[in-house]
Image 1 (cartoon, rainbow over the protein chains, first blue to last red):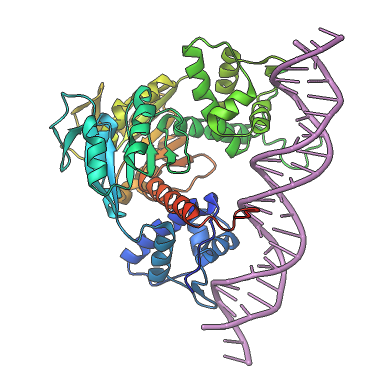
Image 2 (image 1 turned 30 degrees about the vertical axis):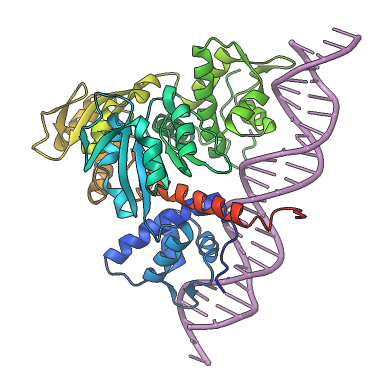
Length: 225
Length: 225
DNA sequence: TAGATTGTTAATCGATTAACAATC
DNA sequence: TAGATTGTTAATCGATTAACAATC
């Protein structure tokens, strides 16, 4: 027993977080059961895909009935590792860092902001949310003395690599990277990139594309021009 | 001539934005040419994949030489649709919205914030970045009278669907959605979701996974330890 | 039992990669 | 020409989907 391990494909992990969000919503609204078809429709997916994704959690549904919302929620959190709380530090207190320090969604999912750092002496000591900004030099001693799991990196691109190196040396094992520059992952450090400008570019492309499709609905299957 | 169209796979579009970011960096540093192998290594990809991705732009490289940075940059922007500027409105001026209003990266990529809206009368009239916050009721008249392409949605989940409907009625064709709720795309509205808490969950899973792998390096290919 | 829905297999589809001819 | 690198084909790999037996 206790043997679900086996790496889950990234695409599935990504959807598991979406299922989780829906399930938490359902739990709040008092819904006890859910079918794969319902989740699929809600998220714009195929119901086979939902069942296959959920089967990565083990046998967690009931044939003829569906999935119990509460159990499914717990199973996803267990697999993701978010059934416990994670200590997170925030590095770089510019506009974005400041906003992230106050963002409710992190805490709700068990991510605890335990410290905030900036290299600007002007900012050190200032309050941001419930935290007092520390000097970047205090980062390593802090991480060594306190349990820290992840870092949210919101510094300028020019500083990102050196700060990331510092984080790795200190023993942080994951970085959520908002800086518009590639920070390579390695064995002891996982980096999850988030570039907001790139997201807008992706959106722009989708918009252009969908307009083109609606204008000339040719080269759809079977065109014989 | 002029016939690159043909929808580009989402995975490729996603990487095109990454290539673009690297290329812009190279352009700033005065580099004139780049090889697929270099881009691949920089981004942790396969060089075949880079060439295949770039071939979606047409024949844009020079055999034996590589790609000219400036031309490649322009070609990617043309395909993405970011060779022109886009008018963007920001809806929901909480912590995140406020930070996004000051974010430099958008403007640098040609996304112009032209207005900011909030439903809270207390906030209306306040200055955010260079913009004065307007009432949400002014959204429709504004969008009808001014050219607006995209909206950045940073309202609470509870308001997101109704605001999205309003945006669609007004004629906005794309939404970058930061609210933790699914807004369905449709023919005339494309939604690009960004959920920061989910990104942290994905990171958490990767971290757990990589720790497991380093602890018990079994089921790797061909280990003979 | 009859009806419903999962879990899983097999088939399809699409994306990645290796390899190499084309060509600078 | 010799050396290098693209563009593209064919092979591989992985992810999605349809279909259905298992079972609640």
